Image 1 (cartoon, helix red, strand yellow):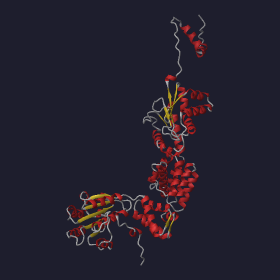
Image 2 (cartoon, rainbow, N blue to C red):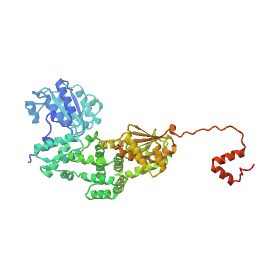
Image 3 (tube, rainbow, N blue to C red):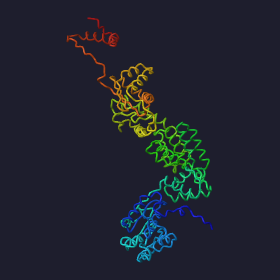
Image 4 (cartoon, rainbow, N blue to C red):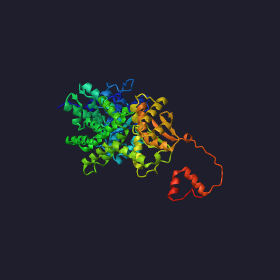
Length: 566
């Protein structure tokens, strides 16, 4: 018979310091041992494969160790420790509640509690999957759990704490175990590879850790399977073939095609994936995960959330710089909708293809909606304000909004679309951080130079006149342009998007925005001439009006008013 032992058993931790990803539990238990403040009942809660039973066994071993070290770990050499290693300790009882969940089983355990330990200080009872006990079994266990003998300690473990009755919960000290983080899993797998003489690619171990979904035991089982298939070398290709995982290259190519608005290429990539036997929903969930990786790669603060190996991290970072936040957020939303409705779609392939086509033209769609917004709002004002902000969040695709913002009562037909655009554009500030390495040339002198340069290249004399008449001020990253004419304000508001893009490029600053304001103090002064009061006939009034306004003269001639007659 083969002597092979699975990694989950062979490398099961025997000391608290070897436990992966549960330092908050291990340290608390060691502190309780050190201060002799140990509870009589513990409840270890958490998902499968994260170390609940392992920590219970380690604690049980330490409790009866007669020669603990300075760090309150079991010595592993005393009689109690060696008996525990041989599974021959009479002081430790393990019960699997999944198959021993009746009242009779609990009564048998209660009977064992009555007898003091023959060797050592404590009798420890480990009950795994305790939520599987019947209600009658729980009730039979209550009294013993509440008032056990001084030598009895109960350690309960469960993956479903909500199924345990409150009277049990109130009698236990509860520890919540976390999912094992991907970096911790990868580090643990690398240690095993080193001990076993296995050469493993970092990207391959990352895929294994991701597939395990927080359960280290699952990661070790997958690892054993890959090693069985590939021998002493674990490669990325072997992992994706054995786990039926799509190659990340497909997703990088898909996003490249989205950026290029190449619908044909996207559909061909999807077709190639289907021909290789992958399900359509696997592709759409994988694309959503890829978009999520790009999203967290856009900001230094969230870069640590990127679940990828060293070789992939740089590829994600480079593609994230090219991808706008509006594209990523909208595409993620489309992937989510596609996944939700996938099971109910009759033509599943067409369902996914329609989502991909929508993603292809995200930028074109948002630009069209923005143009519709500009067209529908009189004088560039949405909520009755006289000022207009352009590029509020410093984005490469500026939004139009007012001092008070978009109100719900405005443009009821376009409101949902407008609000969705605005929500996407608010994230642009994060996108621009990727360009923060560019040295800004923003100062008032350079602003005036760029302003004049833009005005000189304008073919329209009215635009040139408005540019020249504007009084500029620089308030941080905000350019304030004041004009004494409402007509000039409207002209600059119409030119605003192109002007802002030009200034961002000239001044090397992606965070700029512009506010165009009407300033009454800059309006041309009208000289009021006092006319001596005198009596004048209606015919005289008409003659004076004809002198002032040629249209009045034309009107008089047309209707034969004969103003020159007596």
